[in-house]
Image (cartoon, rainbow, N blue to C red; front, top):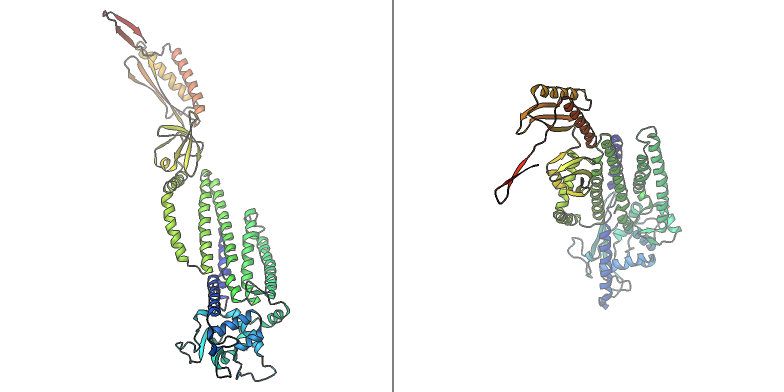
Length: 553
């Protein structure tokens, strides 16, 4: 069992370790994308409400870097690449062969692909001044939109203030940037197959994926499922002759959560094949399915481990302690669930430290409110660990004596001799003195035989010898530790003490033996020609005349 768990955990580490290095471009979180969309809508609203400056009026709204970039974004969203070409500076481009020279619309389409796959732009950070940002360290006629990290190093995406031809100046994507669009498209584009597929299918976008990408993604999932199915079947086949593999729980673990985890890992490793956009990558990098898969695997491993512990306890005779495994397993699962939720929220882009701090304060409040419950829970653990009593034991606790019927998480239930039920809190029960009668190896029978003073020494010795011989002959009596002695001269009789251990743990069986001993002792005394006596009390009552009246009782 330990070997299998070690292999599984090592496999999880080896599978998940490379995932953080698989992406060439760091994707924003879903929270950042939502904030970016809100900012874009706010910028659009402000631009639509701002009064137009007639001196710089432009039909494509290219008066400032921000308005020009926003116009380009809106044209690309509408798939109007002919209009989007008006936002590119197509002058003096270094394309040598005119036959292979891409036109403005094609360059705008390429730029849109690069933008969807690799660019994160904050519109609020782009200057809304017709003269641009004069403090960015660039020439006064240029503004930086963003910077791409390419295989050859960082590349600035620039806008440039260019003459419109009528004496006015407008902002366009710099010709230096436009010249690098084909190079950037080769690195961040869809590739040959992706380009062909994007032309074949409608360019509808769902969750950042075009239709052809969704079809490819479904194909990746199907192929990943087949591969994960084959891998898990191979694992089951390799373990077929193992005693561990014959257990249904292990087989369900392999073909259930482990198969799902392998499926998710293969899908993650293959995700770049569909050339996802930044939006799709942000959704993907939330790792929702991966966290669910790891969570499912973790829960199954917890069940396997605690099931194994329960079997071990049963084999060792600790059947009562098995009940503690359920709340312990539940506690571990709650911890795993908390870690999974926090990890997921962290991947979404939320501040985990604030959440953890809130959980810490809430945990303290819950702990204070549940202090007594925690004491009783710890008490139940102590009872199961030290086992002063078990279910079915007859014990004495304070003024209560009875049979233990249940040891719960909060209290221990005693059934008294009067057939009533007493519930004792575990915190109190674990710290108090408990006398366990069931754990006796034998039961003591102790009594006194009172003989009249008229019985002589010879008869007294005969009684003692006969009783001792009787004790030695009985198999149900521990003769080594039992004894009968002439104890003392009492106030009204010669007293013999019978100190006998009955070799049984069952009280009802002990009562039967005790009855047998009493009858046999009575026969021994009668055969010796003596009698047992009982104390006689005489009382004298004086009436009003002073005459006494004697009575016996």
